[in-house]
Image 1: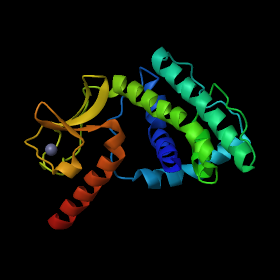
Image 2 (image 1 turned 180 degrees about the horizontal axis):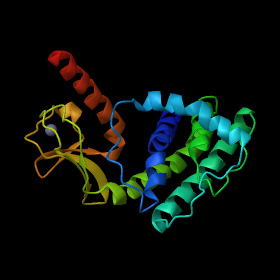
Image 3 (image 1 turned 120 degrees about the vertical axis):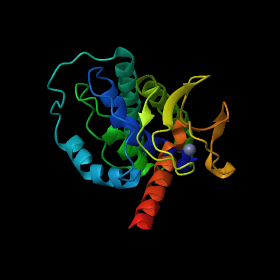
Image 4 (image 1 turned 30 degrees about the horizontal axis):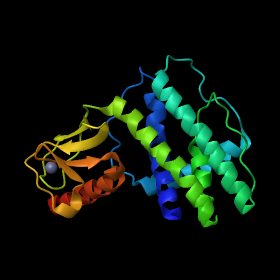
Length: 227
Ligand SMILES: [Zn+2]
């Protein structure tokens, strides 16, 4: 149970920046994050800076008032509130300092998600059981919001299985599930593909971090072969 909760929190940390950028409708939509840096490496890099910031300052990062997508903003706020509660509860439970409350103008849930994830392993199982529906809800909310933003985008990556480039598209499938669909002539082995849709392999959003690693591994292999 603890592992599931930590995995959910880490997933939310990885996609939180995308959610927050998505809240500005005028912001350039980023293509799917390019898999140069593994999620782990990125989290590690961000860790010190973000925790440091959370502990030291309440400076507003959002200087420029900009029109916001209200639905995405609401999702981000909900997650921030949940993450703050969760981090405080975990901190009290394991006997460490509680982070300062979030400044709503900065809208940064990342330090709270990271704090909860880092200390969840020290918590009792009952706390993980209590946290699980909350982290599940966070994942669902982020996925849903990203879907609205990324739906229809083509990804500039090479599919590790059909070796075609630019054939992966982010699509909202029936049932509101956001997924990457490969539109190449593509038949990944059964263990590598989440599901199929219209004869094409499909990877739902929770699979994306794993997918990014596979793309990266295939890129490295190709580069080695070419050199
Ligand atoms: Zn493919």
